[in-house]
Image 1 (cartoon, helix red, strand yellow):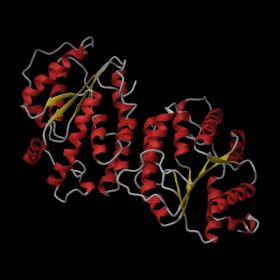
Image 2 (cartoon, rainbow over the protein chains, first blue to last red; image 1 turned 180 degrees about the horizontal axis):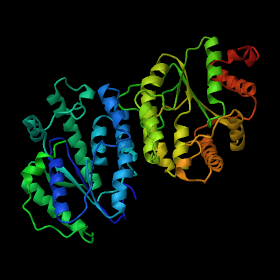
Image 3 (cartoon, rainbow over the protein chains, first blue to last red; image 1 turned 90 degrees about the vertical axis):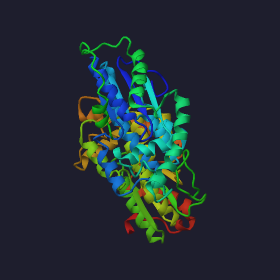
Length: 243
Length: 241
């Protein structure tokens, strides 16, 4: 067991990775709608949401108390709590767990912040290895265009503003996420992530995603009979997917 | 002291090879007298002209409230616990310990990585994973391990009218149906982990079953040898403090 070995739980774990503006959350939300309509039970977990850790993260961000090391550790703490509460039980119960960001986010982001690669990988050694890990790869220009297009707020830490690279959030975002993208490439190769072209249209990406998901569902029991095929309501799902 | 780390150290924190201060760690179970001895050492060292600061588990401004409220709840998973305590220590190393050492302070740490490694290992976490987790931790100048047999620890705690603590009894891992047996089993396991670490991390093990005066005298001898042998000149008499 662990991040390097496939698990033996009856459920399935699907994770999406990518920088802000890569479209991963939109795609994951569409996939959830689809899988539910197919009759599966599909809980969803997202990065940085553990009730135990939330207040600490919030206070640390507000008062700017984090260093690269404590920023990395608090996210690992958050992940450990969610892994124990929200990821393992549904996997053990035979459900499909969808995770918006996983350990690979830390491998890319914390290392871009200056943490040691081996150290960060060791932190997440306990994480269950996903059945499918999709990396939505976009270039910086595409990501920035989507962010400045107004759908997503540029966040202080996502822009690497804590590193003092540039006083301008967009410039800082470009510099920091440029390094993150380089680390993601390395991570994708090391952990065998499936790379998707995040610059294509939402519908194209979603079709590809469903095609990739199908084989891993073999042998998985549905909770209900599938509903008659409805056309995927892309606009509705995409609107609620911004995080 | 030399600025060495157990692993890759702290990202984006430049530390010169030599820190003018000294980090001294006091380890041992709750009830062995850690805080008493730290207080006595601090008073003595300050009397000798040393600048002294103390730090202890869960005292970081970042994580204190979070860890305390997690301990009050009913599910604090062992991995989450290990990582949360590591966050606390990293924050204190960066914001308290390193700045104090840079200013030449003697930093007395009331427990350090070893307690949290022992807690994790006792709860079944992989020892290598735990050791790797603390790769950011500064290696102390010296670790004093106040060692006490669990039965004596229990008597000391209860004779003062104290209670056996839920977490110090490992009640979260279901070792025994009653508090006493659980505490005894848990502290025996913890002691085993500490004894295992004593060689690996070069603890100075101190027999804590003796009187406060005897234990303090031994600690002072050891500390004086590290910091300044001339501190030893007059015979140590704790009652004069």
